[in-house]
Length: 455
Image (cartoon, rainbow, N blue to C red; front, side):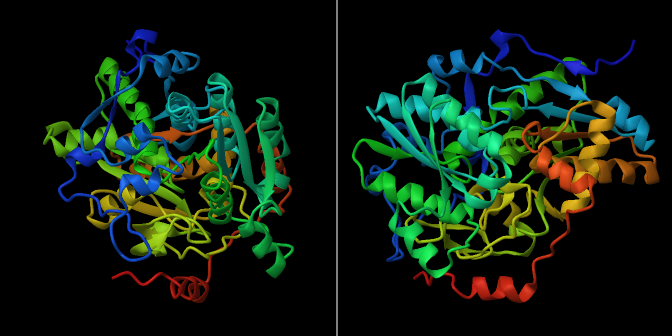
């Protein structure tokens, strides 16, 4: 019997709970700290987050219930398909079996609504009227704009300037869903004005956009801040990806040997990998040799070349200090087209698991990722987002190693979104205008020299 190439779940099989990896970590996560070096309590965060979000952020419970109202919106696109890349396997001549979880089926075209929807729901429940946020490539901005419409919230988005101009159709998606979108740095916040005064041509970064969004949210009682990656509650919401994937593999009697996912802030990698790490933590034999690999751009090599230290999550120091791998909060990454991966830090949970050796990380150059994306599109038909191409690149490399060794591994990667609004990037690649950028060691060292002194 031929193995299926598209493994589906029924609507009633959408998970009822999210998985919290904190419950299975050998060491408790390092707490966020204030500028004085003391742990930050929930009362200090209530100015920008609703109480239920903060409860999830600080929870050590293994299973967190998904509200029925959230699951009803999830049904618009979930469960998402698990697919086998048979044509890609044949093109590579590999004995490996390559599977991908396709998150591009959501209204926003990526995995980001998995967290945007519950965040909008919890804020509405708390009586909040407006949300501010940042976005890089535009996938998070699109997602929170969509989610805001689902629950009647105004949304204001600070979009990294280089992406604002590179990806006009992402911006138009946000505006179609009713959001106000500004190029960051902007002239509407103290943070933006100060940066533009020093450098009028500043192309922006996620760190700067976060500063602007947090500054506005902290100054208005009707407004909260919403973050699309990095924080514990965001990674929690994204575990619906891996939880579904486990059910789908069970249907065909297989289990992955290696899991790969693009990693900027860490939400999509955590979403696909954390539920499988739960099996490893439980001592399940099938997960004993499981490898989970975070894939980042070599131009923004947070895990592979950063330092594990306390740092701010934004450029201006508005956020608490978080223990994470960082390139320094004033690190200015180049304007690569995988805008969602242009972040100086990484999730504290992903960082700790990497630091303790539970997961791996690799960095890949821009041209190699687009080569992988084009090869994938020409065999599987789906044009992937530039961020997703990082996971595809690593999956192809893994499959080619299997070709050399003759191993028939099961490879799973998270295809985080489609690239329909990233065709300018593909145009530049196909016309030979894209370049690789390896960030100089001296530039990283200079940024790391500005890490805050803690304790």
